[in-house]
Length: 363
Length: 78
Image (cartoon, rainbow over all chains, first blue to last red):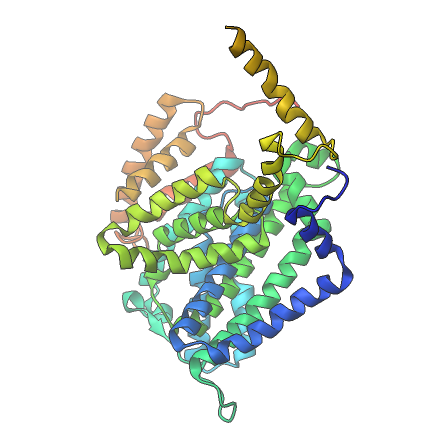
């Protein structure tokens, strides 16, 4: 369909092309997000903040898995590492900016060291090395109890609303998550849309093609993994902002798999999909618990299968699938379609059907 | 449920090599024995960190031999 017709899908995409819409929509979004914490209840603010935390973690996973195509099962380890670094810094009264910088740097360096060895290996071996991170991380956190507080975990309160701001604690925390998480999302969007994003895509598509074009798959795999670890560290900082407590269970292997499920359900290789994945990670266990606490895992697994059967591209492909359905429906009816639009879809629909009906009539 | 079986199974497959069924059995045997020996005789590891042993083993082996202990190198035509 080259000519824009009056279907809702094409008028919507035409609207999106207008310059003022491209500026107004993000502006509107920012205004809504700035007002929202003030009007919502405390429980809703807390849920939104948790969604933000795990959306950032899923975003990191998306950089290495969705965009670069390397299987990483260890993302939760970097969240846990970031949370522990934050907790240690806060309990020792370090400057909070320094703590934040360390929370970015230490997981990034850990990720870099792992990736330098892991990226030399192909497909499954990377999964194997990254699967080790949460599995070894939990007993290691219990062992290093002078830093981590052992199995009891460690708590750190540093995100009470500042005096004189007039905000409640939950509103202040949500604002922190929105600002830091928003910056991470915007930066990642620029990263994956630019030169590095194209390099990641070609490494995902075919490594031989990548190296024949002068793009070292090894270097970009290491880069993607390091960035994913860095984003994981940031999500660990945000985790401490919201939850204010971490224990070895934070980075258990099961949570890592849940992050992976959230990424796939939200939509792999998509910024908006990371947000949906974070929402899935937080909201769906609550919903399934409300239905029947003993069936939580079963319901989640069933939901995963349903989403993957109906929408292989994840929840983020839902609008596109609906649009395609809308566009196809007048063509599918054949005779109802106006004869003035001779597009290939309307033409092939009845033409493909007619020989069948004729044959049936003769038989 | 039975997560650890899955993890050890995958570890044995990667260590033995994806192309060699016999190699996987031998690798699984090596992992089991070495892990428990390390737990008893290496002070730092102990019983709580013994799960790290197969992964360290994989890490070292795969850096030297990316195809696994008994695997064959696969050549892909482009």
